[in-house]
Length: 379
Ligand SMILES: Cc1ncc(COP(=O)(O)O)c(C=O)c1O
Image 1 (cartoon, rainbow, N blue to C red):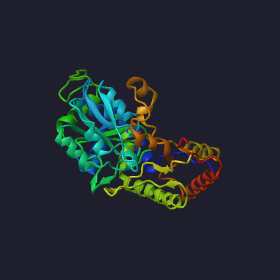
Image 2 (image 1 turned 60 degrees about the vertical axis):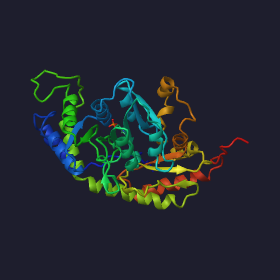
Image 3 (image 1 turned 45 degrees about the vertical axis):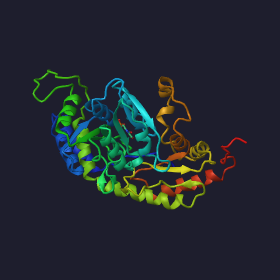
Image 4 (image 1 turned 120 degrees about the vertical axis):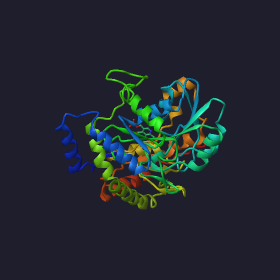
């Protein structure tokens, strides 16, 4: 059985919506992005949603709007996808990595407080794997120190923290729609905010710095081409309409996994914090006990046609970050341990129970192999 790591969930409705766009003259800057933005803002009960061509470009624009400049510090987790730190570097500011809760993989609020200096400009919080970070204390810290609070909600569309949606808990938030996400536009992203000035700035910067009053080919400020095209927006409109169905299917797949992972030795299913009133399953990441050689488990699975990924590989240990900032192992113990022991299994809304069964059966077989258990402690 060949099982893909992830799969988009596309129906005839999406195909028709994209084809309709192709029959018009408006392949970019047309009515579909306006509709997608309006629907998205309504879904989150937010004032403004601004479509962009990736989560990464959205994060970049939130850094500029938050006035993050050269030499400023932005507090963020290393346990994330690389874009959440790179967006800080784009503005020549410094990502200050803080450690995580060892079970959820989300930023530890106490570590955030401890990392604040007079150069701190913003906190960029990440909701890892579709689970909201512990936002109450993080909001309190941002208020107390007068810091901008931005959410990287790229993995958390639909997730809820104490009954409130992820992406409405900071001053601005960013979502992403790469094909492995809960909903997709191919490539694409969305910035959400209640701040009208920021929304105008995002709209201008995504469109080469043209302001609403600018004539054709007039550019008020430095901008980028971060526009979301009309085919992608049309896809987004349909996927967003189907979001509840997509999230429910993902929750079902996660439940099938949970039942089976509970039966396997030395593996732990994802930890859901009490504050998470709704998990939005983006990936299914298990935790291996320390004495399990996670990489050997991955290799055994691969031999049997089951892909799996170390998720995440900490950003501070990426070659570029080590070289540029001198980060080394030992700096962020919980992050590094998660990087060594967490394992993402194949996951999507179109996965069948038989596929989940197969993955778990092969996991069991991998754990039975000789040499899979190692001693991590030197004598
Ligand atoms: C936490 C996080 N931040 C940012 C991004 C970047 O999104 P994109 O791939 O759309 O640029 C992703 C997507 O993979 C992500 O998971």
